[in-house]
Length: 493
Image (cartoon, rainbow, N blue to C red; front, side, top):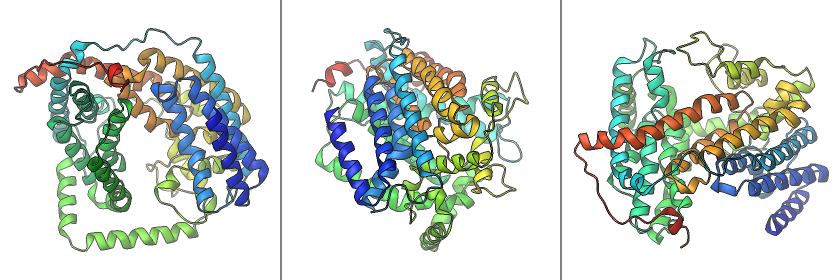
């Protein structure tokens, strides 16, 4: 913790130098300290709980604090209620610290999900089988599972398959884990991983989906970091080039191209993307549009962005700004109450059993409240963070009591199921899931996580263990037996 204290002191000093209100800077420092303590209590990134805590802090307030320090802006500038917002943030993270500490008293010492040498031997075939299954499901849904509007109808077998079809991204994690472990840390990729990355990234590019384009490399790095894979110098150079490419090209492409490449079917989406790439005017038009959007961003209400100038991807990792907008609305009206929380629990019931169950669409609802979404737009989902949602639903009691209680249950379930995530490749699947969910873990999302996400992951684990290897054998792959180095041995290097 001594290093954390040094960083906090330097952060406080940097904020005050930029003209930040000392009280705001001090409370922000307390929020960081609570987050760091909670992170250490649960075991850091070796647990699903630690991943939730890290990415919640990183994507809500920590990114904003450090960006403002290095861009010489006062941290409290462009907020409607800076002290209310940062105090709510600090109290929420103190509650999460208490939830983390209490959860350690009840977490099972013997996690449900375990891994054996036999599972490791099967991983190569498992990864190959997952690709085959994912491609087959994608083809079936694209050709038979879409309605006239190009969507999957709720309550159908196609909707269930669509929700469970994480097979190809999962291939990247399983294949990378297998390659690193069986090569004793000398290699990290095989042909199955490369094929899965090209397919997932290509579909993401065609659909102009940031998640689709970024997920393949994120999943790969996730396993490499967890197993402490040592990159060679040339690999580091390629990683740097990809990061520049991702920020300089893929991010503007995702913002610009989604308006015309996303079509009713996968085939039409690929055709629209092909036609766009053939047009020599596409990329100049994309960068012109992106610059215009940045100019418009500077003209919009800076309460939403919290910065004097737009920062692209960084704006999306500064969700404390959205918290401030919701807190401002609540202070001028009243908390919503239990409606959305009840709907969140009701949403756990499958559509097949309750076709007209309540739909929780807080991103769209809050987008209308804050003016980010047009009145007639009932589909666009904007990003909001747990603290602002808790305050909007229940006021201070939501921040101090309800949010920590829900995170306690999430920590308890996640760590009792998976334990140390480095012990199994499926643990890395949960790390990826938690990293994506954490910034948007609104109160009604917790029941969805318990009742849908965790059972879906457990089902996928069953498929990877017993079904995918047999599918791979059917397509011609054979089991390869070789010396297996357990992951815990790799971690000693």
